[in-house]
Length: 303
Ligand SMILES: [Fe+2]
Image (cartoon, rainbow, N blue to C red; front, side, top):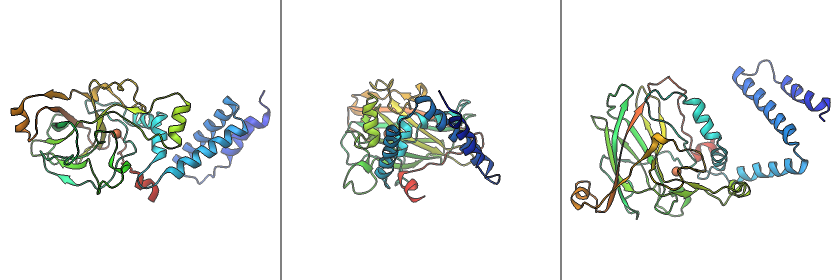
């Protein structure tokens, strides 16, 4: 049975919040203190378990550097990233649905021209991705910027590999006057999130697999519009129903059509067989939701 101190302590900690604290910060800290205290009471956390949690969080921090973001990974696998996404992007109103940023975004990818290959030199199934960027009224957005990133055919991002010679399998691309974009790449594959750190150990303890279904990452921005952070998932992937980070939305699953036609392939500067996918991204007007501020692993280390 709880004694008086157990409940009084929560109010005592909240009462110490200064009157001059920023109101939003105050609200967040009140909620955090209440929920953490409730959690300790609910599971009757033992001192050993509490110390294990401290060791886990310490190890999570120690695993982070300018390329590895173990805290984003932790947030992702616990569904917190998707929950933050959900409460910030409630009504899509015809705009493209959002999903997690993930831990592998990097600023400063090179800009390529429409039709270029963002995977030059990487082995994999040749793939053509094209589409348009539109406003919710269906107006083409010329000069919209697409930031693209993906894993290689073995499921690794450049930041996970040694000696890739800089940023790889990443690019920036601008839409043309009709809001169109197109680029060549390799077909993405399903991959495990990094399991060589503390988050991998916890996933294993929870009896969960570490797999993400195959996807391409997109961050799409245009003046006067909310920046869209999303993925396109490959239809038919075996992990669409059990994405380790809970990021799949039906509207983001796309048919990557396989073609054997040499003539079709040549038109795109590819060799058959190749895959092609088409998708139109629809951006909301700015100000409807809080602007997404993309954070890379490096940002978290610097700030
Ligand atoms: Fe990814």
